[in-house]
Figure 1 (cartoon, rainbow, N blue to C red):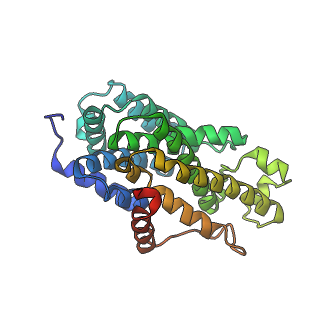
Figure 2: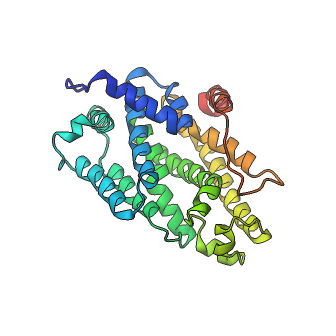
Length: 287
């Protein structure tokens, strides 16, 4: 363990950032040991900072500069200000203490440059690549905090990230459409003769419903695969994958017949707590 620990308020800062902006992952850290919980909060706070760049800038260039700061920091090219940033300080500590690879963290920041532009997601393969570098990578890094790296954990992380990422795209459709941003792959839209302009206008059409049903089916397949793979990783590593249970519950609610796809999805925190607590005691996460 490193002897140069950041100020205690850095820990509280990261915890509050994650609690405010990524409550399911915050709850998942409560099922991890204290030392590992601190590192998990650092990872998740870093992810929050990267994801929030999109909403903090009005033009792409300032967003690119902010993302570049993080990649420079991870490559050791930022001095002084890194330790003064509570999230950066905690992330550097987690990297040192748990021997985390830097490349996936840098790639995660780079991949989110896509968020800064209104370029549509072209294909399902492109979407899967984006989610593998972001959502799946975060699951894999969390698993590395809780146990030694393994092919089983990496395989599980890929499916968990794809499942969760697709659910988030369906859930975020109202916000994305309002900003004329399209994470629904053009390839899938075209296959169902769904118009981009109808999506941006917030129109619920049979074509859009077919697109969302296809994506929901893809997500469910990844959920099923991920849950079947949990038994291949040690129980101590499984808390890293508890957010998958929240994604599964969200997918069920988002797929309810008659739900309008442009109605904002706001799950309650009490329900989130209940979902993750129940999952933590389930056979998949304990046996």
